Image (tube, rainbow, N blue to C red; front, side, top):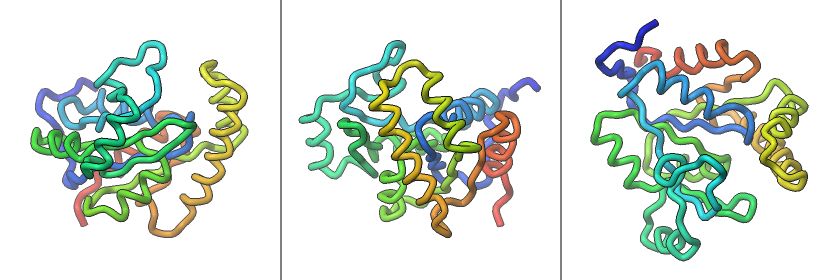
Length: 199
């Protein structure tokens, strides 16, 4: 199916908060959404104090900043949410969301559990999607398959995944939970949710 030339905006244009354990395939799913609906969505590029991984570009994958610069933004109330994970800090700036909204794009936020909790307490009205693995064993296999993580890092991420899966069971936290077992099926569930008519 060829993408249409004009943006196909969903009826509900609130920011889309996508969360789920590291390695579950969140990025793959929302990149498919971007590819199939060009000019419609924009990823909220997070700030982080971690070093870039091979192939990552500043202002594309993340805004790579120093710890003092990150803390300065916190002090100026510049983040919608921010968290510390694996010894590094991550945050979503208010400015990024506002800029993309002004351009008529639906902003997609890829965030960890702590960030979801903070956005829920903020003034931002959003829709919440949780992407779950078919099993923790499948998630572990995916993390190991990346070849970018140390054993310590894998164990940290798996421990965190248990916490996230537990939190996702809380009623009312997410609008939908999608199990990413088969990619096309998971994508269809995401697209149907994003484009469902307003009630």
